[in-house]
Image 1 (cartoon, rainbow, N blue to C red):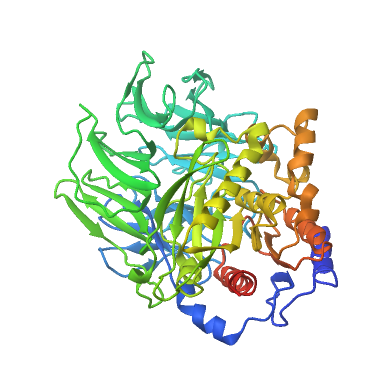
Image 2 (image 1 turned 180 degrees about the vertical axis):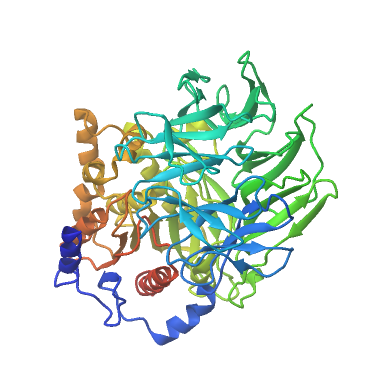
Amino acid sequence: MRRAALVLSLLAGAAFAQTPANLPANLVAEGVPAFPKELVEKTRPYLESRAASFQDWNPVRVEMLISTRFADAAQLHLVKIPGGDRRQLTFYDEPATGGRFRPGDPDTIVFSKDAGGAENFQFYRYDLGTGQTVMLTDGKSRNTGRNFSADGRWLSFSSNKRTGKDTDIYLLDLIKPGAEPRMVLQVEGGGWGATDISPDGAKLVVGNFISANESQLFLLDIQSGGKTLLTPKKASYSGATFARDGKSIYFTTDEGSEFHHLVRMNLGSGAWQTLNSEPWDVEDYELSRDGTRLAYATNENGVSALHVIRTIDGTAVSLPKIPAGVIGTMRWHPNGKLIGFSLSSARSPSDVYSVDIEAKKLVRWTESETGGLNPERNSEPQLVTLKSFDGTQISAFVYRPDPARFPGKRPALISIHGGPEGQSRPGFIGRSNFIVNELGIALVYPNVRGSVGYGKSYLASDNGLKREDSVKDIGALIDWIRNDPALDGARIGVTGGSYGGYMTLAAMTHYNDRLRAAIDVVGISNFLTFFQNTSDYRKDLRRVEYGDEREPQMKEFFERISPIASAARITKPLFIVAGFNDPRVPWTEGEQMAKTVRANGAPVWWLMAKDEGHGFAKRRNQDFQFLATTLFLQKYLVE
């Protein structure tokens, strides 16, 4: 802690002077001017927009647990009827996430929370009757992947508390007073997690995530500790759930296919049956409490499609029309008739809905505020496809300004998703609508090679020594923008977060002459220092995707492609954002890039939050970051 305080003290000094003068104490900045009053007032309605996400159903009553934000961080709320008041249950400085009711218990909720964005999540039990909260984990380690047994007695989860690196599997007895979590499987590696508990409480199905293209499923006997490999072939397997009789499991896999499909495996014979036929990834599914119905969502060029089938024969259940958008968490009510989920679209923030399977009725439970603005003004995204340097087809969603309000060629900002196994999707872009509606900048969200949603070959096409092929995809997109008659090829910017931050910096080293400015949010600048400093539980998982820096060939490759190695080429304005507690991409990745590019004579803005991790989660910090971003774009991209 002393070292951290010393580092922050130095950063607040001459090297990174705090500007503007009224900078909050939790932020460290350099080069960021004071915000004009008119800009603050103009952005205010966009900053007041909020969203709601579905968490769970009350197991006894038709009531919903949701997450939304009224103050600085998202908290858990109870909604008793569609359109009803949102009764806030948790009140923390940090976001309360992943709320679930204990099965059969309408008064007990288990949720998770970390501190300062460090991602050392702890589980908590909340009593709806008394309002009291009790921590269930040790308060220090990282705890994830929580699942309940069908009777609500057992809670399974992964924790790295033994070594800080390995994610062992634990069980906690929620009935026994003062019970401590018990390790039931000791592992090596950070990708392990239990995905479900058998109906009789005797077994766990356990997943080992190796990479986006490879994982394994095991059946664990809790009493003996013996585990059996269920998936011997090299493929991706996820989301395993026991059938209600415990004799089979459901999961999704891309074995034998480009896309993840939904299957049922007989645990006795090992035979399985494919349950869906759509030529797209099944991105989520949920089995009803009685086991008679399966709801699943497919990702069709970024847009979600909801399906329900009967498990006895696989026949489809007809559904009411669902608005086009992106579906979030799905859960069945125990009554087996209602499926709840979140849904967002370009003109609607994430809100919570339910479908009554028997009545064929869609019901909207929340209608999140949009700061008094009419969301119908927001640009609907255009899906475009183009050929990259080697003939590979890539795509992008383009949000264009209103040509009546902004005539002539408009500047464009390329916004690259993280992951790299992520995907840009046509959902609500929130405060970024200000950039389109008020600054007149076209936002371009590409899905370069390595993105999920387009098949496993596409997903793996940027791995290892092919890393820079995805950067070349950005070059092809720049060419497309320059040829679009409505866009200004002389005013193109690039931004991205996490892996998208690396892509942003890499694009600037390759295309500095064709780009006007860049914004890097928590991005990698040097793969070698990234591997040295990222959290231990992440290193092996990242090596599978990026390559193993301990091998001489990969080390030389990383030295060559890391943006820091070619930072002398960057002469255009650069804005770098970091979180001091980031466990994934340490803040030093941004700090070393800022110093290097500043030495080139290029304008560099720097912003770091002392109370954030991998991206800003607290509203006050998000607001400051957005105002700074808007000012940066006005100065270096619009003018």
